[in-house]
Length: 419
Image (cartoon, rainbow, N blue to C red; front, top):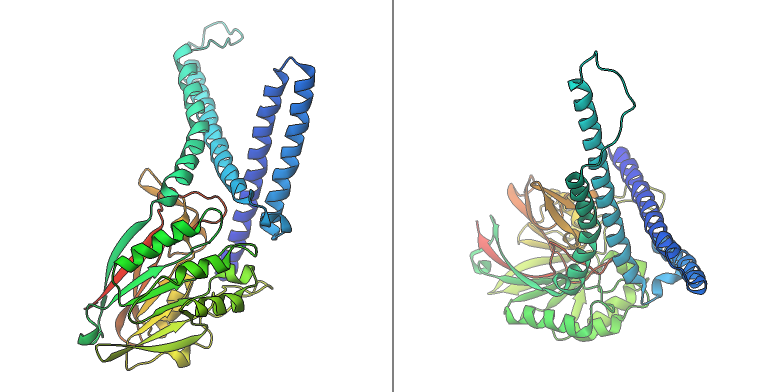
């Protein structure tokens, strides 16, 4: 089953790459046709070289994205994601409309043939354009091509910056009476960059502080790449405070940026303790609870083999007090429940960043990598005979395209309740 899923994800990746290639080829062909309408020879030649340069640049940036090349450091790199996202879905929309038009024509022709008497003299079919039909499909094509670009602009300029506050009550069966009402504030996936500025992070930190939570946590991905301002991120998080302290874990982008130790030290200086396969006892109203943190949990090694989740965490789990796990990757939840960890806090998915509902079905890219996309999930734990819970935070920042649609950034406040 695992091998089949690995192969399926590989095929999906190849399919995405193929669609990206064909979508870019379509748009550059459209630009070429536009160029041919220009009568001025010098202007037409200049536009030709500009298109060639843009094609090479887009190809180089795309290749750098998938290979981790040096071009990822360019400040314009996130705008590539904005263009690829918009142009891909616009191309798909146009193709869907064109396919619907062809199917309509075939149905009409077959219907006309079936109604025609057999004795009628056969004559070459003549295609008579229906102005209303033609206008309808032409309008639909324009709409399908424009809608993704409009959505991307909205997701970049509006929803990406619309920080929302989520309040979640977490019922725990073995929660001591003293811990009933304990509040935890969570921030995740900051991705400090030109598209997540210090001012924006400061606004999120202020919102979290206003909640008055007893405990604050940050569940990984402080930055995206090597050149992102990790120091600025730590400086702003220094203002995050809670009576029981500010705690965190590392995400996959700390690995990609090769800054795990540096991020841990900078956060320590800022007053945020990063737990790296460690636990700490937190005491509130005289009652302790066990806080566990792990680095990003890889699902597979570089050789493609499946890796065990939460390896080495077993000795950190306590049976005498409730356990809270900070794990950037929500896929650690199944193993956490097996170990009897009552509550897991995660991020990583960004809620898919693009979450669109069509005909009561949600289109969300995060579903290709996890069953835990956003919100709260529960399953029974055989160890404790209680229900274990997971919460997946949509995060603050973005990766790839600096766009959010249907998945706004969030700050979360949890309140523990006795089940």
